[in-house]
Image (cartoon, rainbow, N blue to C red; front, side):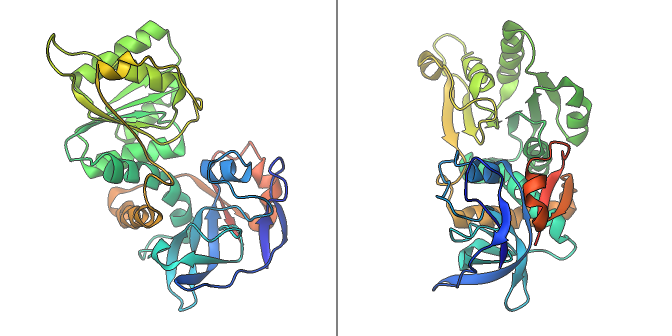
Length: 318
């Protein structure tokens, strides 16, 4: 069969022949209709993610397709070495979920991964309750924008967002954010704005950036009256686009109500992540969830992989 194949993690995948997998006990075969290119898939294909397989392999964490019985499904975590960017994949039976009618393949493939990131973080990791206030650190990308829409749909009482591009403020507010804090400003001014929002009340932080901005939020969470405990803040790290590490004084944890969590492969089971996507897909129409997408033939994988002019989420079609 044809597939996108990684033989060298320093190069984009190539459109080549690859052996078709055979279903093992507990698995189903899926004929792929679309597989999205996400930050996770890029990191895995470059060998920089903790879940990266060894070459040669087919990249792709998830996608949409059809079971042998004709049912249209979303699937995730196909068995290595054949990821989603192939004509056929073998998937654990508990890692597929039916796609509701009215949602096209392109939308389902594109929205699943970025939408699941905040859905799983809120529900599975932070035990979100309606009415709670959410701060989204790094809301200008596809995942962050969906996080705003999802938090609003799930009943967040207040949504504060940060971003490195102040020109996006009006767009993020239109999606449902109540306040935008630009990250590209004086360190003291940023700290003051973050502290003011946390003092007003932030229950959950969804962090897509890590690095300096995450550290600034943590340091700003230490306000409380003398002798009193600081407000509980569940800080959930989802990504590290702002840096893989940070400088954080130990006192920032001892003097605050911070609870540090992570949401991703390993902290949430594969089956639970797929269940989150099923819930997300059910909400796409009712919540009006949107993500900018563009379709490309899988045969174009090498050129599309490095095409910086494409700002939409790419979905490869076998």
